[in-house]
Length: 319
Length: 310
Image (cartoon, rainbow over all chains, first blue to last red; front, side, top):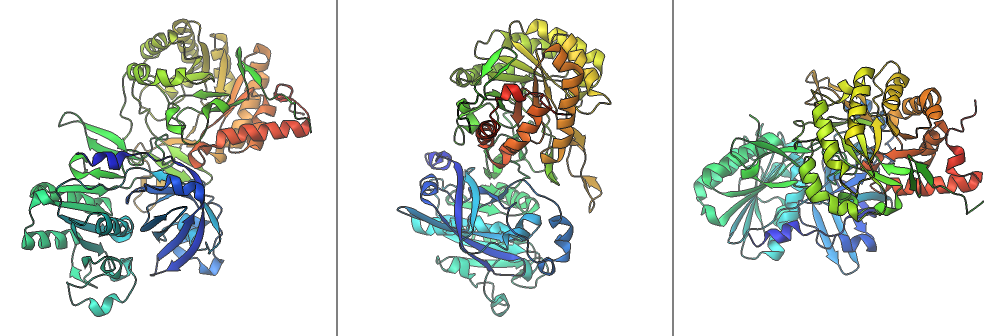
């Protein structure tokens, strides 16, 4: 695979300060954090790939006023956190001497509660760029992007990369969540809910068709996004050799996607998530079960260094 | 301010430019950190644990954050001593600072065999004997909590290690750490490092299960620092000072002021661990901070070791 070099190319990693430019709430628990990279970081991030990530230090960010903290997080925010948190970019633009991007995030605990108080002009420390992003094998004409919940972030970035750099590939996107409220998109989902052919704004801006699925049927396809995708594949019957599936989301969803990809013999890249301490491959905490050299052997690779994007055929999912 | 103050120390016969090392398991085999810090600016480097055979480590979840700390149960995942010698020694040879290789095992024979293989490696200054890992079924901490076994394994590895400096890493999970410290020193340890992590548990109250697949893990980070400082001071007073055996102090060091507490308590050198996960350049920044402190106090690090006023 000649394109592999693109995936494994190592830019110089480092610890950098980024300047926050915006921090918009786009849903009940979803925000988009805009940032600019300063000049030293711009060079290191010149080859940042969709699906790579940074480790952000949020331990020094302020807490919201007590009444602004949801009850479910009040225990968590009383603890002193020390570790950084990993985030992929949902958008990233490099121009000479300047780079800017956006992180799509969901408030899930102490660090992301603090993240909501960041304002334009604040600086935050990041370590990056880290890990290996999505790559495009040769001969692909169709890219199926499947996301679950907050896993959408790096796929929106990938959508942009595919449309701007890979004109021979047509992407289509599927986004799933438990309920309408758990979909991290802007805009009114209700009005368009009746029509499965509608486009999410985040993908439509790149000319990409998209479909949503919710487990409770509150919007779009009623059921799992993986079933929605499988249904589409069944109906459209794409040439498996010319197709690739890219996905990011909860592990149970990724396991189902890996199964569909294996059944249909479609290449598939999955962005995995594991609890990380360092993000740079030294703590060895973020073990991901993978196939070893002989078929029955399971080995552990590191999500931060060997991933977070893996080929689904290399992964071992526990049932 | 005296800019000429000396922060160099002599550690078990090694002359090091400053007293700051990286702790085992937090900085890999040195190559991983190249993007973030100049290893040659450290006092020295301690590698990730090496065992006789490669180990794949524990299943995930392997780490969990705690209040001002973290638990890990990596399970000594490592490439094994043969691969270490084949792949990593050439990188270590290029470093100008002394390197200790942390050695772990499940049996006495394993420790001895690994030490024998390392004894002939010129690039290595010493061996850190890991008899305090809390995250493996066999060996590890079970060797480090029984003074008879500490004595037996220390003298066997000392013999196998030839000219190499032998530093024994002690577990804090004992009733009296001075007993295991004394056992190590009397069996020939050239230096002591303390403390390894504290065995601990985090429970997910939604599932009622431990957060880690290994059930328990080792607690590190700022949460353990005051306990580690106390134990360093205790071992210094009870054993190390009289025996003239230097202490490598570690446990929750994040800043130069943390490091100075360990030095005043009796550590000749310090190792930075969990802090490197947060800022991979921590260890070098701490060395710079120690220099500033010494300039302000107009004292050398040597003068400050064990200078606790009581």
